Length: 106
Length: 240
Image (cartoon, rainbow over all chains, first blue to last red; front, top):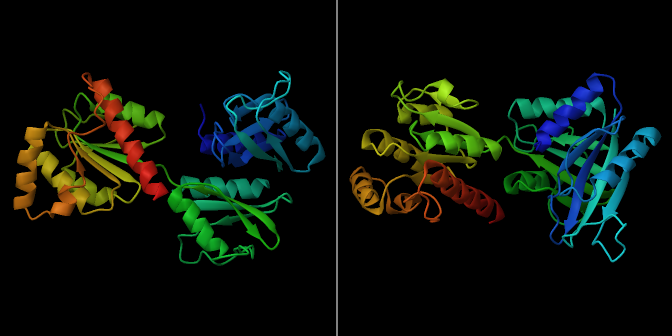
């Protein structure tokens, strides 16, 4: 478990060691979302991450988006909602909804 | 987020300064705001909300509530992310409950200070990761200056140590003041504090017997009870 402050420090340490980094931040939640707005997750160019933006439900999808953001340099907003009957779709089992801002650090 | 912005943010956190980041979405430009500092207005972006006060007011509110917020400005949505210094817990008495309480509070991200003038009790080795002060409680609290994000819990059962700590805590805006001891012990304590001129209102702020009533028996269970009550007070105070 990392505090959001530790996630920021990790992002800075990765940058200092020459890595590409993206930072994901929960910017809005609806209903019973697992992590509150402001929660951070940092992802490096190798796909390693620290911190969390949900209870583990959407992290994989956020890592994929973060790697794209690292490549393009363009920040983007993701949103994840209630998991529907399509089991393969990424979503939140808790029935909440979150919006996540992903930006490149650097 | 630019590297230099991240460094400025981390520096503010290290210095224990309450800070807010403002991010214009979806464009991504950012500003660092120190809304509680006298020169806060300087360098603040002109992203004031369409309705109501200023960006600075909203940043201040986010800090006080310790809650992120999105506001609608003329230039777009502004996401405000407050970073407060850690909540502090001052524990008076390096006793059997102190170790699990300090450990659990630390896991919850709380900065723990243990105060006990009896040097044999308050050794740094017994409390890893904790600030240990072998001082008299009144002196220690004078130095620590409890604020609205500080909790004070007395655990010694010794009036010489607990009472001065409670008087200092009640004279401060501490969000939580708890005292270990049975209802009977507390009744005697209340009598002493009253005689010392502590107001009824302040006496009413003391949580005693300390902690949520979960029938706790062991030191660790008592620590759970105290921490649960402390968190409830913190989050309710922010919400109101």
